[in-house]
Length: 197
Image (tube, rainbow, N blue to C red):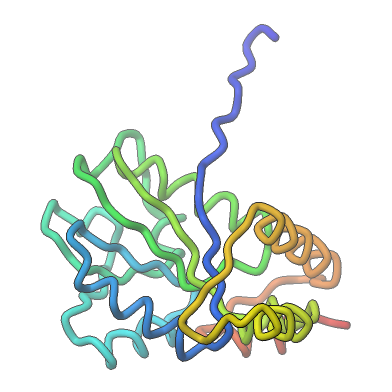
């Protein structure tokens, strides 16, 4: 009651496509967005792959490099965690698109909270696919079958609070199996080396 601040929950959307290729295509299409776009990944390999496919994406060395130009920008989430943020560094609207949830839930929450406080008007979304390691670990094949039965194709995505809750639960289950987290530059290696079934 006294001395406690109520935590503000950051709002975001999880958009999930059937394939990693379609997810990548949707991320690349963000370069044509009307407002500035910041694409965030926790894995350098993902950022370099996106820049190879779309050279207009600029990889930032720090969060403050956004310097009020329109992007599109690429940023490793490590740079978000390293940045001292006491006030917003960017005053306009910006679309922040994550290429994945960080596997460990506490760090994922810290990244989301910190990036939200760095921008005055952020719109935050996660671009995921049923082929992403976190989702394949927890039987994404059933979701894909359901999407196909509903007549959805690769262009369609799903998003719902229940799915976002299921992702958080999957992260919590995963965190219980990780003894000592080691950082790796690509997502698949991170899961192979850290997750012990």
